[in-house]
Length: 621
Image (cartoon, rainbow, N blue to C red; front, side, top):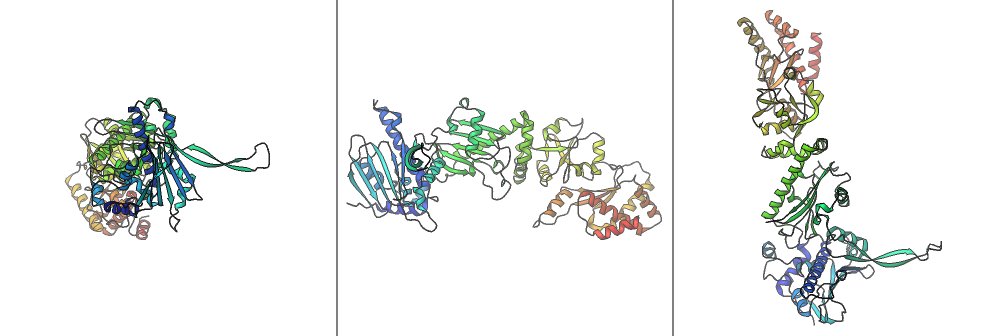
């Protein structure tokens, strides 16, 4: 006799089939998890009864598929269910008393995953019909049958062994849904390995195989046969003690999980116990994946709960700047939503994420200190992530400062900011830096000659984001960051008589009038050697920043306040002073424009009129 689901249950079941689970293949994970729970209950029951018949080998899960008849079966040797339990557990779905499933989903009191509750009904996403055949110790067997929201039937059934068998009759294939896949043994094997690989009981699949009918003959006639194959590993590597594992074990797990084709630079094995319990194995890759710096890259750690995979990539466990980290986290303390496809946002998840972040940073600092060659390799591949984190946090991620590396005027090999600070000259107040497109371009810049000749080390910033990051950091300890290109870096020469000062001031004012707003000032410089002039910036917005904005098609075309510094010891300066004495304004204007354009080229800025610059140069030759 067919019985009807309760009204609430019918509504929930309808939601279950059409709304709750986003991924249909999840149903297999749910049914296997239920089978594992049943085995746990029988295991505990037998221990409590001091049963002499206990045999660990008797505890397993079997899967049988029939592609022709379009069904699959999940069999377990667990505790089984009586008629009353079939009625109670399967006749009333998600017995929470809630009228609104969404509200129930948000409740902290719900604990139905891992029982015959909503997880069991996920099978209706792929099934037209479900049969549950179950038997408890000392009881008769019973069969529960349902074709969905129209109700269910329970009848006595002759079942010899204790346990439960669930038969899933698959729906007909549709244009965009191939339900028959769930009767394909290789697809089932893949799903078990993906979602249930670490269930602690053997999950066996009765696989159809082919072999030679007679290996002694050369007629190549074959025959089909079936073999029970164990699909899961059962014991996850993260549940083992570190002392049990070798470096090779960690590397093999990295490759088995397809985290990358490289070998990881380092691994972190965590076993946290206390207010929040979790285990994790994290990897720092040696090379980025091909899409790491693209918008399509998906970061995140694999998330397990009691050995069952919940999410393949959980983004909440890693901050964006550590998106290169691969690995797995397993915790029984997380609040899962009712479908176990998502996590509830709570302090436990946040606490695990914070602990993981701190531990990764600690490992990287250890790598920087103890294996510099490896860290240099790491930073070359992933250092931009740290710079971006400091930039996007407006400098609040200052703890990442210790992980930054830059080349310097004393070595192309990267140095940390702390290493620079430890080697400053006595009385030095600043950490000097210079920007440019590459090491060679910066090193040849005439603006640096004076500082280098006096023995100051200069950090070379070659990435567009570098200067923005340095300005946000402001200082390192008592040392403030200062650009080697700033106009007031070196004081002007004051050893001039008043007449010479007046003449030079007059010259610079006249030159400024020819350049207008292109420069905020023209002044002499005592930091140049054999170069005639350079462009330097005034204020926080530098020439290098202007160049960065020029490269961004949608960015505002902001301009740095530029100062043109003239070398008073260069012969061209003598020609300018002579032209001033002769009141030859045409020549002063010509030299001024050539010096300005040449200085723009040295600074890496484009010329507004290349043809005019070429003509002006030819006039001077």
